[in-house]
Image: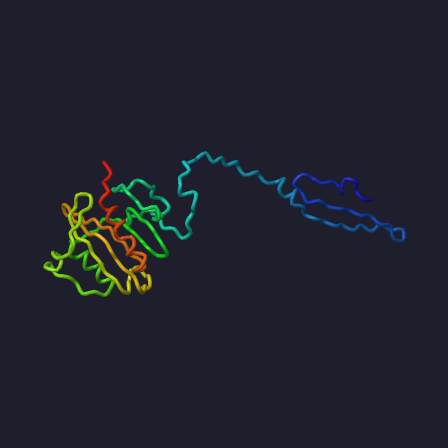
Length: 221
């Protein structure tokens, strides 16, 4: 005779369904076994609960996430660099800062403004910029003929170039571009304000860049 308990679920064991059928006076028993997920889980320990109690203050960067961002883009908080902008044109869109771009802006279809601190000397940096436009390097005598400029107490020169621009860093050359910027030196430190972009758009921003440079100041330590 079939066991009446055989159809019941036993704790931690697979469920066995037993059917009994009488054939020719004999009893044939067919067993159908099924392993149920509930039965398996019953014999497993539940994972410990994990409570997340860390938090951070929401910043303006959370409003516009940037794909393929660098570490600097993700983790450097705005307003922590050595410079504070004064008068910024309304059509300049502020960009995240980085190690090499302490202040960064975009305008028009491809205009770019970057404030940074560089190594090397005044002439070396001027020639590096000119070399990006395929121009011959200047001499010290040539450097003395450039328009003088000043930013955050550092004296320097204004640099201009136009033509095909090769920005480097794996970026392809760009045609019909211009450069206008200031390279200044104080106490062995090179401060740069570099504006590049389509020639027609950049020409309209030259006076704005001079105002920007004049109102730039250093953050108090």
